[in-house]
Length: 158
Image (cartoon, rainbow, N blue to C red):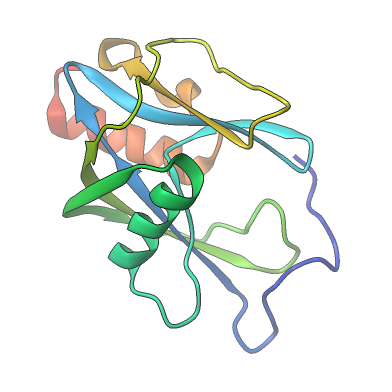
């Protein structure tokens, strides 16, 4: 993925991009989001960017409502980035990602698939990925790969 120049909403005074993601495990599947952003196909955990004045739990609930018209219940903190990670899409911006275990209140059926579902007419597609097929290659970004590693080591059943 190519870093983009001059389109960052971040400033020299606050050179951080804070992202909040939900990890949902259900019936031996994990929820993933397939997305196309700035012509880049990616698979990641669902969530998004923290707005000024918003808490992390509030951000995650807002993102699920805005992106998927779903409500989620945030259960517990899973992980916060503990290493330096430059943002992929913005020059000279440091990424900080926060992950929570969540439960969903379903309003529609989410497909089960081991293959990314990239669709040009949709910003994001949710899918259930079998946990026994979960590995670091399942997701696109380094921090998500770290979370996959933590899940495999913590749960011990993947």
